Amino acid sequence: MNDAVTRILLVDDQVLYREAMRGLIDRWSEFDVVAEASDGDEAVSLARELYPDLVLMDVRMPRMDGVEAARLIHDEAPEIAIVMLTVESDKDIVFDSLGNGVRGYLLKDTPARKLRDRLHSIIAGEMALSESVTGPVVDEFARLREAAGGNDGRGDVPSSEHLTDREKDILRLIAQGKSNEEIGAELYLSVGTVKKQLSNLMLRLCLENRVQAAVYAVKAGLDK
Image 1: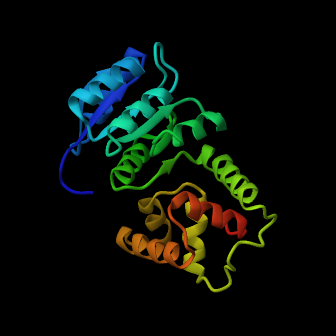
Image 2 (image 1 turned 30 degrees about the horizontal axis):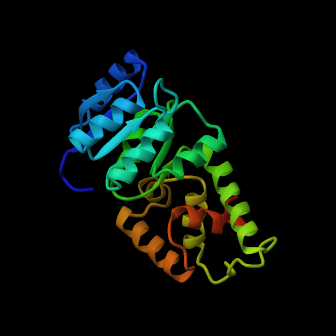
C-alpha cells in the first residue's frame, strides 16, 4: 500500500454503528471517511458523485441492500474496492456478494486491528474474508469446480509433493483466510517474501487468484 490516504464511503443503516465506525477509522491516519450513507440507494449515488477508493458497507438495509448496491457500483466503477462489513454469515449471501464485485467480506465482530490489516490487504488488491466464512466458501468453490469439470475427488489436483514445507504452509494459511500480513507474521516472513512466493506458487499451479489457491489447498488436503 502506498502513502496516499484511502478515501472511504461508510454505508450502514444504523446511525450509532456508523458513528462508532467513523470514530474508529478517524484514528487511522491512512484512511479518511469522506461520506456516510444509510442505504444502498444512497451509497450508489454517493459512489457515483465522490468516487471513493473503498466502500465499507452493510448487507441488510432499507430501499436497496448492500449486494445490489455492490453490483451497481462495481458495474460503473470496478476500480472501487467494495467490502461488506456485516453480521450476515450465510453462505448464499457471501456468494452473492463475491459474484457482484465485492473484494472483502468481513463480519462486524472482527477486531479493530484485524479490520485495519484486512483493509490494507484489500486496497493492495487482495481478497479478504473473515475466517468463519472462509471454510464454507472455499468448500463451495471446490464443489462447483468439480461439478463444472465433471471430475470427482482430487484426481485433477496437481500433486503437492513437489511443494516445499514453506509453500504448503502458505497455502494452508490462504485456505484459512489469512492475509499476506498475517501469513508473514505467522511464518516470520516479510510481506514482500509472502507475495513473491505466493505469486510463484500460483504461476506454477496455474491458479488465477487467492480463492483458487484456497480451493487447491483444500482439495490437496493442505488446509489442516
